[in-house]
Image (cartoon, rainbow, N blue to C red):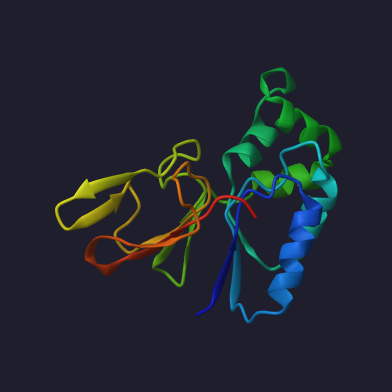
Length: 168
């Protein structure tokens, strides 16, 4: 199965349109969006409308959660900027997204870590290879990381494959 993975769009409709044009030239079987869809001062509502019209698998990121649950005075500047552009239907869509999901029953999907959308997935050296935080042993995709060299495929313990991504 060919999987295309997006993450951390942050309302950047121009970047999203460029990625969609590239995807049109490829043969992805499924597109996964790992969260942080709209937060930022760019085009939150337009980006949300486009994403809502797609049959992608969407995961809720920390900024998606924050823009729908925090009071305005507790939001950061990016979340406040996005919130001011969004309509009730956008907020309802974002708040209804799952924090985690699985693809084909065994590929785990999350924004930060399996347990917390604010927790970055960190590598730990273990006896038989590299462990990746609390990611299930089957492997999966995560969107938000502070790992140097993001976007590179890694072999991890027991032959599990993981792709760590940051940004559209």
